[in-house]
Image (cartoon, rainbow, N blue to C red; front, side):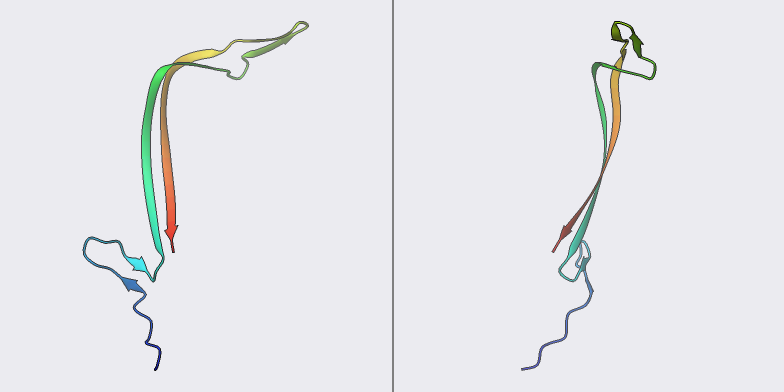
Length: 76
């Protein structure tokens, strides 16, 4: 019995993502805004050295952070 030819490289149905053969690629993008209490951190010049050791002068500010996320998934 002869082997049937392979199916089409691209196949899609309404409401579904196109598939390349049996493998699938998914992409996700995200953006987050985070806020919270005050944070302290060291900036350039905030560490002072002397004969007794070192002193630190941390800066303080409210926490406001925007982070991005990019993700890829392969399914075989």
